[in-house]
Image 1 (cartoon, one colour):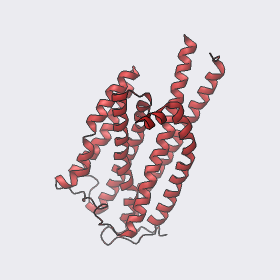
Image 2 (cartoon, helix red, strand yellow):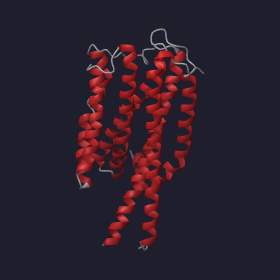
Image 3 (cartoon, chains in turn purple, red):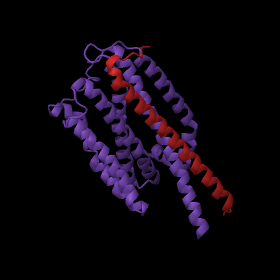
Image 4 (cartoon, chains in turn orange, purple):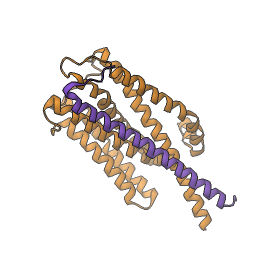
Length: 237
Length: 51
C-alpha cells in the first residue's frame, strides 16, 4: 500500500506517467497494427462467415468497458477509505472513456446481431445488463457535474460507483444464469480456434492499452487543471 | 489480408468506421484538453509570482 501511495502522489504520478506514456502509446499502436492485420487475414468462420471480424472490435470494447468500471470502483474505494485526492481525479477521468467503450460495444454488437440473430437488439439479460452499465457511466458523470463542492461530489460518486459495481458480475454471469440469445463465454473455455483467438487477444490488449494511455493523459490533464485552479485561488486571495 | 466481406460488409464496415472515428476522436479530444491545460497553467505561472 505504501508503494501505491508513493506513486499516487500527484507529483510522482506526473513524473512516472510522463516517462512511461510514450512506451504505452507505441505498444497500443503496435497491438492495433498486428491485431488488425491478423484480424483481416482470418478465413470466414463456418457459422458467422466474415462477421467474425466484428468480434475483434466488439469483444475488446466490451472487456475494456467493464475493466474501466473496475478501475473506477477501485479508485472510488481508495477515495472513500483513504481520501486520496488523485483517486478522485483518476476515477472521474476514467468515466467518459468507459462510457465510450460501452457505447462502442453496444453498437458493434448490434451490427453483428442483425446479420446473425436477425435483430439489432433483444432485451436479454446480457444486453440489458450491459445497457445498464452505459446508464451507470452516464449517471456517474452527471452526478460529478451536478455538485459544485468537489469533496462532496467525490464522496457521492464513489458510493454510486461502488453500488453500481454489482452490475459487473451480472453482466459476466448473465449468460450462465439466464437463457440469453447472447452466446455463452467462449474465450476461457477454449472454444475459439487459435486462428481467431490470436487477433482477438492482441486486439483486447490493444484496447486495454488504449484505455490506459487515454486514462493517463486525462489524469495528467486533470492534475494540471487542479494546479491552475489553485494558482487562480491564490492569486485572488 | 482480405477486405472482401461480401454481403456482411454492410454491417462490418460501419462498425469499424464508427469504432475508428470514436477512438480517433477520443485521442484528439484528450490531447487537445492536455494542450489547453498546459497552456493555461503556463500562462498562470507566468502571471503569478512564486511565493
